[in-house]
Amino acid sequence: MKILVCISHVPDTTSKINFKENDTKFDANGVQFVINPYDEFSLTRAMWFKEKQGATVTVVNVGNATTEPTLRKALAIGADDAIRVNTEALDGFLVAKQIAEVVKKGDYDLVLAGRESIDYNGGMVPGMLASILDFNFVNGCIGLEIDGDAATASREIDGGNEKISTNLPLIIAGQKGLVEEKDLRIPNMRGIMMARKKPLSVIEPVEVSSQTATTSFEKPAAKGAVKLVDADNVDELINLLHNEAKVI
Amino acid sequence: MSVLVFADSSEGKFKKSAFEVVSYGKKIAEQLGSNVVAVTINVADASELYTYGAEKVVSVSNDQITTFNAKAYASVLKQIASKENASAVIIDSSIDGLYLAPMVAVNLEAGYASNVVALPSSTSPFTVKRKAFSNKAFSNTIISTDVKIIGLAKNSFGVHENPVSGTTESFDAQITDADLGVKSVSVDKATGKVTIADADIVISAGRGLKGPENWGMIEELAEVLGAATACSKPVSDLGWRPHGEHVGQTGKPVASNLYIAIGISGAIQHLAGINASKVKVVINTDPEAPFFKAADYGIVGDAFEVVPTLIEKLKAFKQS
Ligand SMILES: Cc1cc2nc3c(=O)[nH]c(=O)nc-3n(C[C@H](O)[C@H](O)[C@H](O)COP(=O)(O)OP(=O)(O)OC[C@H]3O[C@@H](n4cnc5c(N)ncnc54)[C@H](O)[C@@H]3O)c2cc1C
Ligand SMILES: Nc1ncnc2c1ncn2[C@@H]1O[C@H](COP(=O)(O)O)[C@@H](O)[C@H]1O
Image (cartoon, rainbow over all chains, first blue to last red; front, top):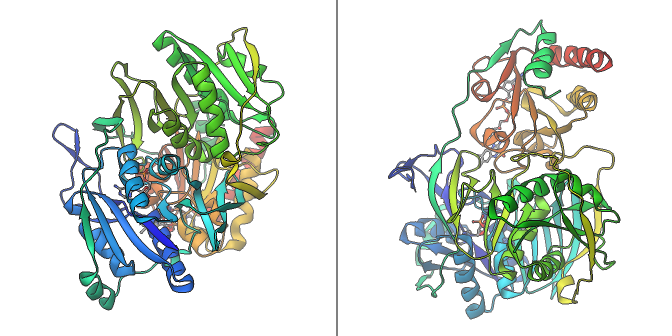
């Protein structure tokens, strides 16, 4: 089995979000970048397929050279090789088109991605990729087993989960549950040393135009101060929620 | 030209989001000078949608898709969008909507913006405001393709009545074997419980509750208010509560009218996922807990005292 894991390079979850150039660009100054948390679940599941079922694991990112440390981190966790498609990730469609080319050239039969990137929160790439390639697709995946060509998966649904049967070739957008949090791997020294020698190939993009463009960013409006209610005066809270906020 | 909205349903009944997308679609249709067409799948009587402005409903009945199937639904929407010459397609950004919409987008060679929170600020260029950076910001995004796909974030536009005398047409959708490549085997779902996605009120508790044995009062409070229950990440990691209740940046998003956080400190990753809720209440012993900065109302106090009192008083309030 040839697995491709899509890695998006995102600000750490604790980052303060700021913009520059008149709120038209994200200000990366002082921001720590990490593997998108959802992609970590997928990468860890891919390592399991590698160790237990002899799969090979390639990681891919569509982005400029600044994303390479993130790809190296994925190699240190255990991926065999990495590909960077050398172009700005302008929108989900453009990224999906670039990854589709990588899938076709490399004949991957399983693509693992994340439910969404925690920066632009598009949730677009995996579904678009599936439609471009006409592969099967499971979104919000919280469990995956592969046996030959057959796959059984589960996905989160509103208020529960759904068991699914499908076949390779397959695209998966994973989240917590695909592996448990405690099983996520932190690169160790040996992994980091080995990652330096693993191949990271930079390939040029195919020509695609993006379909959407971000023109500016805004921060949510500043919130008024909290109204404190005395712990002995719960009636007042009920009164405020009923008469002022009108939510009960 | 028309604006197509997908009015999602479950077991033949419309989800609340269906009325919100129809309300929104109606307004966009006015902006664009076109009409709104709602699509339903396996709903016997769609006339409820007329109340929210759907002049026309295209109704699909097909026993190959009695439960949600993203690829097959995407194919149905493509067929109808082509027939109705749709210039925009509106889908809710729910778990199922987020699964479906990117596939519809590729099928229709349309640009897609998810988690949109308002009407387009301009229709030329077509510009929408959407959530980004896990609720820490918004981005104004231009969709430059002829056909636009909009994923509407829950509770961002609201349900607005706009009664019209509508008509329903049935449509015979073609579904191929390839469309059914992903099959549902079984569904495991708590019955009779309000889900976080559907709930107007969410009661959420954190590590401050000390242990799973203390959740009785949380469930009781939720029951009194007809609310869903949720929890912080460590609570589900510790196995005190099911994973499905974990809310926050890496859990489920919450966009309810009221969010009550009990014994939750208000870490940035927690707040990111619940910030879209309209009114936030915090109950915490520590007046310095960061949640007080994000909340509208707060009580500095011990959950084990405040919550039982709250339950009692709410019961009395509900009766009066
Ligand atoms: C990559 C990453 C992703 C994350 N994603 C999420 C996420 O999606 N969702 C999430 O929730 N967290 C997430 N976290 C974890 C987050 O950083 C916090 O650790 C977590 O939210 C804290 O949970 P808590 O508030 O329940 O617990 P604590 O921080 O331990 O807070 C407990 C609170 O209870 C109060 N308390 C104690 N006793 C009482 C009492 N008797 N009555 C009332 N109050 C009391 C305390 O004052 C305290 O404020 C993430 C972390 C990382 C690193
Ligand atoms: N620039 C990128 N390079 C590689 N994979 C990506 C990129 N952007 C998104 N992805 C993958 O697609 C998933 C969903 O991302 P998004 O559609 O941006 O929310 C992520 O979790 C990644 O697995």
